[in-house]
Length: 115
Image (cartoon, rainbow, N blue to C red; front, side, top):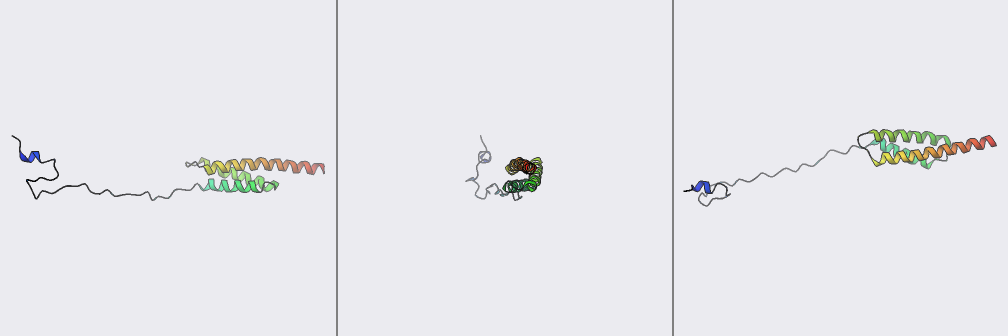
């Protein structure tokens, strides 16, 4: 013969005991991630300097300095744990600007030696 208490233990409400409390699970707190994302400032600087050196690629010696600075900033940005497309874009833009500036410097040297 079964005991009535054993039969109603797993039920949330028992008709035999009107004062029995119902147990519910507490509401879970929602926690949002409020930590700001860390910017890769060197990658941003490399991209800006690389684009700027592409824009002024017709100035021979300043562009050489800017493109080297862009390569250095982008390389530092790539070496960080957060690898970003901005660092790669800055590196590519700076390398293209360096190649153009070497070509422009070679043209100026040839033009000065002939003239």
